Image 1 (cartoon, one colour):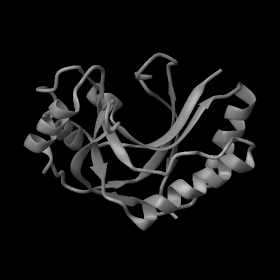
Image 2 (cartoon, helix red, strand yellow; image 1 turned 180 degrees about the vertical axis):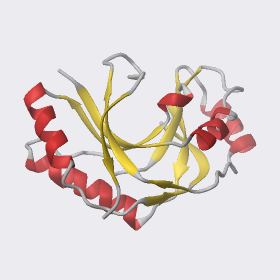
Image 3 (tube, helix red, strand yellow; image 1 turned 120 degrees about the vertical axis):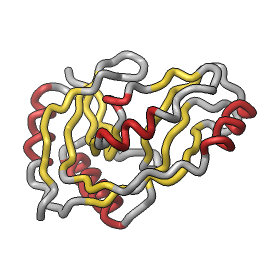
Image 4 (tube, one colour; image 1 turned 60 degrees about the vertical axis):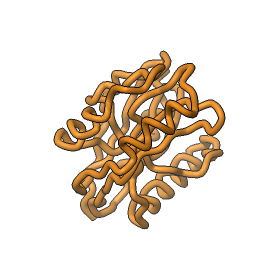
Length: 178
C-alpha cells in the first residue's frame, strides 16, 4: 500500500541555499536536502489499484511551467511549534494547479483536503522547541530569499510510513508544458 503525494521538486542551487539555513535551533530534526519539495496534494496510504488510477488521471494535467519564488521563513504550530519552513510566494498558476489536482483526486473518491493550501518547503520538524527559540531563529534568518526558478514538471512521490517520510521516491513525473 503506497503512501503518495504530489509535489514540485527544488533545484540543486536552491536546495543548497536552504541547507545553509540549518542549525541553531534546539530540537530541530533537519530535512535532508534531497527531500526538499513543495507539496501540492497529500494523498496518503492507498491501495495499488487506486494508485494506478491516480497516476493515470494526473497524466491528463496540461499546464505551463510555474515560476516559483521562495521568500521568507515561518513556522507551524503557534503555541507549540512543530515545523519551520520556507515560504513559497503565492501565484495564481500554482494555486490553479493544486486545485486541479484536488478536483482530480476527489473525482477518484479521495476525501477533500481539510486544510487550506499553504505552499512551503519544510526545513525541519521540531520536538520540544520553544516558541521563543523559533522566534529567535526566524528573526535571524527570516529575510531569506532565493532566486526564482521554473518548475517544469510535477511529480507523484511515494514515502515511507515513518515520521518524516523520507527518503521520497519519484514514482511518476508529469511535464508542465501546455
